[in-house]
Image: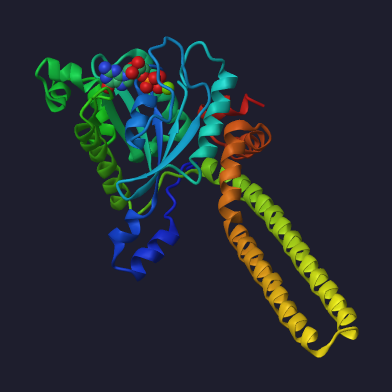
Length: 362
Ligand SMILES: Nc1nc2c(ncn2[C@@H]2O[C@H](COP(=O)(O)OP(=O)(O)O)[C@@H](O)[C@H]2O)c(=O)[nH]1
Ligand SMILES: [Mg+2]
């Protein structure tokens, strides 16, 4: 059984087959990017460079600063870019249980599947630790993740100081690094995250984004997915619907309250008017009638305004529910455990030993 089948995203295909403004449609789409690599490789700094702002914490530090997978978003280069920064999955000081939990969190945050796994490596020696990390990541996500794999070299300035280009550096490397670059179809580029010239930095980031976009287009809009991802997505959608229903119910109750209050005000006004009219002269009556009409208009305008606000609130419910689920995945335990369990169920349905350690979490 292939546990990591590529699933063609049918909505994308429908959109592209009906519409030959394929690129415009595509350009507006979300790009989900997962950053991988050992601690200190420059994942968080690269994430910030891609986002064009300092969103992730990055420090010269021997232990991992990012202890939890985090998701940050921006709109840049015509895309809604979502970056998932991961803690060092292979950091030696972390327990297997902690690492597994983070992988499950990463699966949740990048759901329904990332468009790119970006392996961040420092230029220089390709260490055994980095090689082990890549092997582990492939074990977890399956060999087909290499179709979505990119390598981003950081500290490009070290090469520039030696008057060397990235191509020259790569040409000198055979063995494991060459194998990795071949395996990910030469999809690699470099960056100096400390570059002071914002334009130069932006150009480097754009090169990576263009590379990802062209790979997604080459794959007919597909992103990486797997049985694990689908299992996680089901749980996420269920929770999202639950939250959305709750929000819609809140709006419904609020709407009823607004209507009830407006009706009560109108009834009260009507009553007062009738009482006063009985004791009034003709001219006074006319004045009162005018005042009454104005008051009616004011109450109606207030009600319409409230109605508009509630309609907007209801329309936003789906978006808010999605956002809340992401928050819960980052912060909470309940949904994370549910995702973990569903991933385990999928994984334990006769899949290889490589996934054994995911099940060992439970
Ligand atoms: N000189 C240089 N330093 C970098 C570069 N990228 C990251 N760093 C530094 O390397 C350290 C670790 O980076 P960080 O992004 O936190 O790595 P992470 O653990 O993989 O998230 C920080 O001090 C960064 O400023 C780069 O391209 N050039
Ligand atoms: Mg980091």
